[in-house]
Structure formats: structure tokens, C-alpha cells
Length: 208
Ligand SMILES: [Zn+2]
Image (cartoon, rainbow, N blue to C red):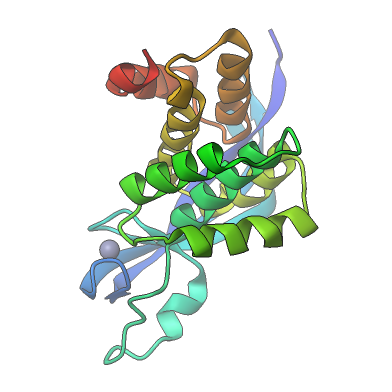
């Protein structure tokens, strides 16, 4: 057993209300800060560097960059996507680009899943443009997930895993290799095996 390890700890720095772009109205929020801790037997004991921070709507659980608090209350930006919506789109595109090929079937599948999990509609053209942007600056999926994780709450992380499962099961089955990719994604996002198990059970019909 590893005695020393590191783990991320999320603390609420401030609570107030803001105009949530997703809810399109005044909602309570938490300003969350995520810090890496040196952990002894998984118990965090020594604070290390700050990994990230975000604004979390307490109604829809959407997370946003801090500048959402600077927007005028009278003119909420209804086109703004939460961090987890952007992250699930980026994750699915990186998964799609992993083998270097993108065919029409894959595009249709990702578009359907994106619109199923997102509250905002994406068109095929929008998705194709985005795929081209990502193709010009590709990065390994793990590198991206490690970077975005401190901007996501558990709701956002779980949604990303559910999208990945939907992509993997689009051909009617999830093979062993895909299971390992999804496990690795969950580990990178610091979801516990219990959380992953819960998602698999909840989405069992999709994964079967
Ligand atoms: Zn909200």
C-alpha cells in the first residue's frame, strides 16, 4: 500500500448569487478552489499548489470560468457553454481523432450524443468546424483531461464519462480495450471506482 500520495481537494472559497447562463436566471453559486494535497494513507495532510478554480451553479451544477461573475446581470449570455459542455465536446472529438480518421458515421454519432447530453444544440457544420480546429492542435486525451479536471465538479466529470461510454457503445458493444480507456479517463479525472461503478450501473442500458 502506498503511504504517501497526492490527491485533489475542492473547497468552497465564497458563496453568493449570480446570473447563470444555463438557468438564465439568478441562482446561488459556490466559488470552488481545487488544490493538490500530499496525502497520508489517502488522507490529505499538506496543501500543495492550487490546480484550478471555478464557479459552480447550485441549481444546475454547471461550472464556469470566474469571468462569468463579471457579466452584467441584465444581459446574461445565453450562448455561453459551461466548462463541462465544452469539455465533453472536446473529449469526444479527441476520442474521434485518436485513430487519425473521422468518417461521417462517427461525426453523426458524436453529434447525436453531444445534443443528447447538452442543453444547447450543435449543428453538423459547427461540429465539423470544431473537429478541424482540434485536428490542427491535437493533444493526447489524458493530457487534456488532466488540464481540465480542476475546472470540473463531479457532475461534469461524470457527464464526460457517460459521453465516452455512449461513444464506445455506439457500435452496439463496449470491448475490453474501450473499457480500459474509460477506466483510465475516470482515473485521470480522479473519479473513484465507486463513482465509475455507479455511472456504469446507471447507464447500463447504453453500455450493454
Ligand atoms: Zn445554473
